[in-house]
Amino acid sequence: MTALAVFYGDDVYALDTGIERYIDGALPAEVRPYNFDILGPEADVDAVLLAAATLPFAAERRLTLVKQPAFALEKRPGGHLSAAQKALLAYLDQPNPAHGLIFRLETEASCGAFLKALAEQADWHDCRKPKPDALHREARDRLKTAGKRLTYDADAVLFQAARDWNTATLAAELDKVFLYYTDQEELTAADLNRVLSRTVPSTIFTLLDAAMTGKTAEALTAYEDLAATGEMTSAVQVLARLIDSTRTLLAVQGMQSERRTQADMAKRLGKHPYVIKKSLGQARPYTTAALVRRLTYLLEQDIRAKTVSGINDDALIRETLIALTTAPVK
Image (cartoon, rainbow, N blue to C red; front, top):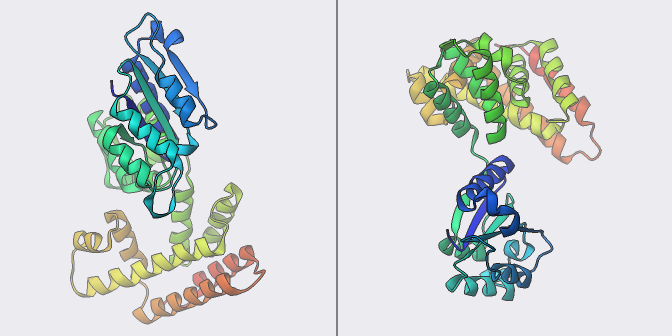
């Protein structure tokens, strides 16, 4: 057991399950009631060091979990350390071998000078939220390990869903898949759509697809679904996704004229193969001039959203979606 284990990041599920596993491995359940303490954010370094000096009772070790210690997250200009931070580092040079500290640091912030120094002396656990692509790969690997095969369209559904997952959502959603399809080896898109929760990203994909393929009613319905969840109601957010999609259409159209493969397009653009395949289909009816006009219009709307005081975001989004879905493709 190390003198200090640090669980750091913004993935609450990873933080809590990681700490739980660590405690289970370090301290037997039968001695835990007398040898496990919890300190809150108000605990200063003196309280932490006092706890660390405490010896175990009828056990080989003792643990103290410190949640969000403010002194540990403090950043000072020029990378200087506070007296409290220096005191903790000094303790780690000669720690109490019978007492283990656990820091739970839930934050999206990058590590400052102190945490970088701490990482060199502590048992460091990175609990930052994985990127969507990483969650998609992990979900696919877990399904494969469980003997499940995904059709191409099913993998596309999984990719869309994973864009809004964290590790907790991944575990919960895959549990549903395993429960519903215990004896089924091959999973189709319909199978996954039947059990996976409808996520914000899947609704965004619906909106983008409708906007790019001229389906006014579907685009507006998808936007209303987003607004109902309280997500993506900012015109700047919606426009950013529409601009990115239009740029992708222009890019794949240009690469297709250069006879590049879809795999090459995906690699060059950093997009999932499903996105490339979808974009090629969406771009097919448009001339390059029409896509340039759409992009120019979206950039102008983006400027309006960012510069016009008191603009009505809801009205601007609806205006934009109607204009896009009714614009000529030639």
